[in-house]
Amino acid sequence: MEIRRSIAEAKEIFYRLHRHPELSGQEFKTTEYIKQVLSDNDIPVYPLSLNTGLVAHLGCGKPVVAFRCDIDALPMTEESGLAYASEYPGRMHACGHDFHTASLLGIALTLRNCLPLQGTVKLIFQPEEENMAGARQVLQTGILDDVEVIFGLHCCAAYPKGTVISRPGFMNGAVDEFHIDFYGNGAHACRPHQSADPIIMIASFVQEAQTIVSRNTAPFHPVVVGITRIGSGTAKNIIPETGFVEGTVRSLYPEDRRMIKERIFCLAGGIAANYGGKADIGFVEGPPATNNEASWVALAEKIADEQGLPFTKAPDSLSGEDFAFYQQKIPGAFIQIGTGIGPMMHNPAFRADPDTLNDAIPFGVALVKAALVALR
Image 1 (cartoon, rainbow, N blue to C red):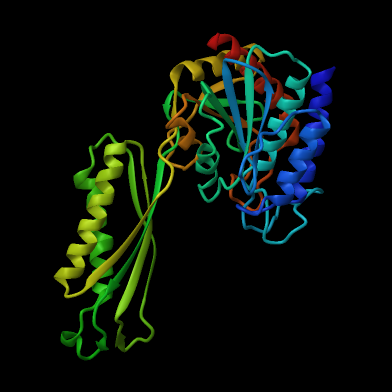
Image 2 (cartoon, rainbow, N blue to C red):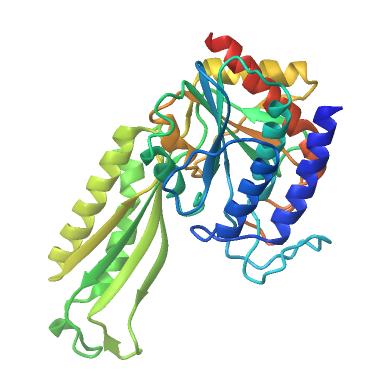
């Protein structure tokens, strides 16, 4: 009876959150709403110096288990046609963070009725996942220093409702970004010999950057060096003075990540110099690859089987996930749950079926309880 009540309340929470999305770093009302739900159910919140987001807790003593959800939305206008669609043009929960938050609140409400627990559960309502900043903010507070295992749950529109998806080892890729400004000398298009053409520099870099994958990376190591945006010039008869190129890097292995950064700097600087110019290179390191502990994935599979939920090994992916920052310090597992096959995340038509909460919440509760027992 108690878990059915928690699920029903979680569905109402989901509808409200979906109608009122907030972007990364602006999740003020979302944070206050989560605090109110927790306060109404006597679930304490740690007094942390976070602008948005929060960490709550249940139980006491060791062992200590953490469960994380993310709370921010995307800058997209919703086209789902749902009766409870976003009320704000240009803001939408297109990655299911409302579903994640409702799931964790449902887990919290259920665990509240299971006290005393055999240890402590820390409930992370993380801000700013979409800009890859939130996990580091939470870690910097030190509130997770005593955590022995951490779990993250994410919806997935590629599988039927209730399917549990995970895998040991790498599950998501490391994500880095670069922006390179090439500087040359402008000239009239009829006098190219008087120029140092940044367009030539860009064209050469686009070609040479692909050799990082084909000639510098081990053949069995997944790597992407993607050139996704270039720009230069103002008129057809003018060789411009400057141009830029932007892109993304995806990888799994730390040694590949370091090598790719070095090669981008080397190639851009060398190409610019060869054509009489220079390059200003900006490189932003995002999250590393998620790296699941095999024993905790095995536990998730066991719980799925006990709950009557199908379990499948996650496919290869180089998508990014800042849950990986937690895994640099804390062993654990990132787990997905199918919410019905349909438009994928980051699509304006995306929808997560709230009936999946019927599976996600009992699964999460059982996983936390089993982890506390396993750690004793």
